[in-house]
Amino acid sequence: MAGNRKWSACLLLGVFTLLSLGLGKPALAQGAASTQLTVGPQGEYSDIKSAVAAAQPGQTINVEPGVYRERLSINKPLTLRGQAGAILDGGGQETIILITGTQDVTVSGLSLRNSGGPATIPYAGVKVVQSKNVTVDQVKMSDIEHGVYLEQSSHCRVTNNEISGKVNLLPEDRGDAIGLWKSDHNVFSNNHAWNVRDGIKFEFSTFNQVSSNQFDHLRYGLHYMYSNDNTFDHNLFEDDVAGATPMYSKRIQFTDNIFVHMPGERGYAILLQDSDNCVLKNNLIMQSNVGLHFDHSNNNVVEGNTILSCGVAIRVLGTSTENTFAGNKVEDNVVQVSSDYQALPNIWSLQGRGNYWSDYKGYDFTGAGIGALPYNSLNYLAKAVYEQPLLELFADSPGIQALSQGLQMFPLWQLPGIRDQYPLLHPAAPPEEWRPYLSSASAGGNPVWLAALSVAALLAAGAILRKGWRRRKNHA
Image (cartoon, rainbow, N blue to C red):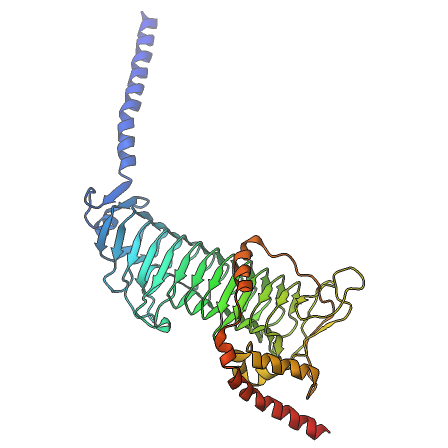
C-alpha cells in the first residue's frame, strides 16, 4: 500500500508539472505578441507618437501605409518599422524623428519628408543626440534640411537610405545629407544623396567608415574638418562642385573611390588642406578641373590612382612636402603636374617604380617597363596657369594648346619641375567597375565652347609671354 501511495504521489506531481507547463505556453505566446505594436487603420494606435509613448523598451512599432503628420521623440530602445507607403510628414518644422540619450534604436522602411529649417540649425529627418547603436536603414527622405545628423553619438549605422534636399533653395542654403559632430565609430554605407548642400559633413569625428555611397549633384561630396582616422572606400562622387575636401585632419584613407565630372572653377576631386599621413589609393579621378590638390599637407601616400582628362591632374603647392606618388596613371590631362615652383621636396617613385605619364617620350632599354630617362614636368602651360589661374578655364582650348607646344619648341625662360626617376611605360589594367566611366571618357571630346573662348584665353596668356620676354631680355 505504501508503494502504491508513492507511485500515486509521483503520478500526481508529474501531471501537475505538465499542466503547469501547458498553461504557461499561452502566456508566453501572449507575451511574445505584446512585443509588437501596430499603428494605422488596422492597428491599436492611430498615430505613431502614442505608440512610442506606450512602447516598452525593446518593443517594435509597425507603421501601416498612410501619411502621418507628426514629429517624434524617442528616448528608449525600440524599433520603428514602416511598411511600404508609410510616410511621416514633419510639416516644415524642426526635426522629424529625434533620438536622444538612449541606445539600440532602429528606424527602417519609412519615408520622411518636409522637415524644418534653416540649414544653420541642424534640423533633420533623423537626428541622433548622445546615443549609441542607432540604425537608420532603408529610409527615403525628401524635402528635408539635413538627412541624418549625429551629435555626440557612436556605433551607429546609416545604411541603404535615399536622401534628397529642399530643391527650392539655393545649394548653399540647403542642409547636408549626413552630418557628424563629435561622433565616432559609425558606419555609413549604400546611401544615395543628391540635391543637398554636402553629401557628408564631418566635424571632430573619428574612426568612421564610409563605404559604397553615391553623392551627386551637390556642392561637396565630402566636407571635412578636424576629423582623424576615417576611411572612405568604393564611393561614387559625380557631377558635384567638388568631391572630397579634407582639412586639418590626419590619417584618412581614400581607396577605390570614383570622382567624375567636376569641371568648374572650384572643381577639385580631392583637396587636402593641412592634412597629413593620409592614403589615397586606387581611386579613379576624371573630368575635373583639378584632380589632386595639396596645400600644407605632408607625408601622404598617393598610389595606384588613375587621373584622366582633367585640367590639372596633380597640384602640389610649395607648402607640402614628403608626399609619395607611385604607381599612378596620369593620362591625357591638360597639365599633368602643377606647382608654385618653390616646392619643397616630394617623392615621385617607390621602390624603384614611378608613375605612368601619357606625355612621356622615353624608351625601355632593359625590358623592366621603366623608362631609361627620368620624366620631367617642364610644362610652360603649368607655369602660365599658376600665374594666371583663370587660364584653367581655357586650358583645353586649341589656342592654349598651340601656345604651349610653341613654348616647348622655342622656350622664353627656364622652368623647374618635378622629376620622376623611374617613369612607367605601361599603366596597370583598370578594375572592371571603372570601365563604363572610362568608355564615356574615350567617347567624348572637348567641349565646343572651349574653342570659341580660345581667343580670350590667348589674350590672357599674352601677359605671361610679355613677362617671360622681359625676363629673358633683362638676363641677356
